[in-house]
Length: 365
Ligand code: SF4
Image 1: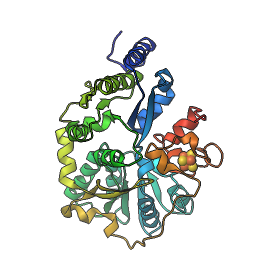
Image 2: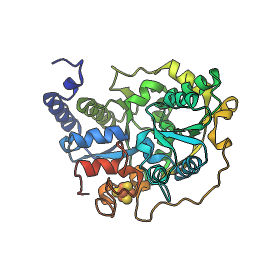
Image 3: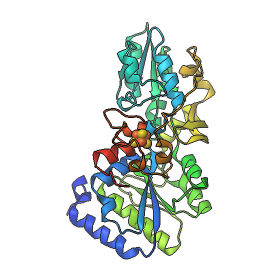
Image 4: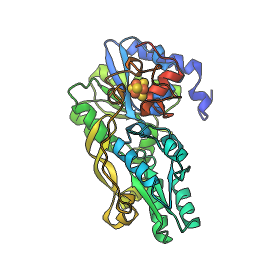
């Protein structure tokens, strides 16, 4: 069987072999968190959790960029998009995410010029083509989107595109892992680290986390065999009392990551404290523009009011994102809250855990 294609990593035979090895390796209960929402969707889509022995509990992590974008950032996005002569641009997933009072989608329906772009460079191009408008890009995501956002800032600077700016909201994975592990409610005993984040950042950043919290971390891909291989390596470490960073995704990830992408990020951004929706403030968990690039910060360009922001009372997205509750344990799941009428961000996003549970019919807690 060729392993050069995704098909090989979805092979039923390989999947069942790996599931058998996990069963043979497991002697006691373990809680393993997959950080990335894309991995949560793949686990549910392929029913991988149902192949695991009952001792293994998978905890779904906060790695859905749309879900953790703070209510404050969404409120600023709405205020900026309502300003005259502004074109507000965003990745498509963000449009339907409910803010405290409205979404970008509602605000567009009321007349704001809000457009979906597939890359921040498209927003720079739009700014060049519409010099009489201010074009703002909603800079959300983890380390995966940061290099292209940094490149768009450098491109705008080099080409003197002064009517382009970003609303900075990027977040970083390692500080979130610290926050999860320090939480008194924490149940996570091992992590599957997101392969695409590690393709950019490498996994050297995780080594001090594994050592200081004594928690195994396995860099893991997104196909069924990748995920089961990651779980197997995590279980073997847990059973042996080891706590190392291992790479189950070597075809895409090297320890050092992509140095060019990291240089781009570090040139334009610096770590800043950031609010995570449902989780709260995590120190140094966001990317803010360095002083030299503050001229591209939309927060400095527009008069903005700090509005009170509160989640709808029924939504327990914070507990879902911290891995403390399952989506199906939310009283609003599938009733007041569905993908057609979402109360919280995890029901909207293609990487949200609530949307995954709804789509793959995991209604039993
Ligand atoms: S099901 Fe809906 S209301 Fe419940 S936690 Fe998820 S997004 Fe919030």
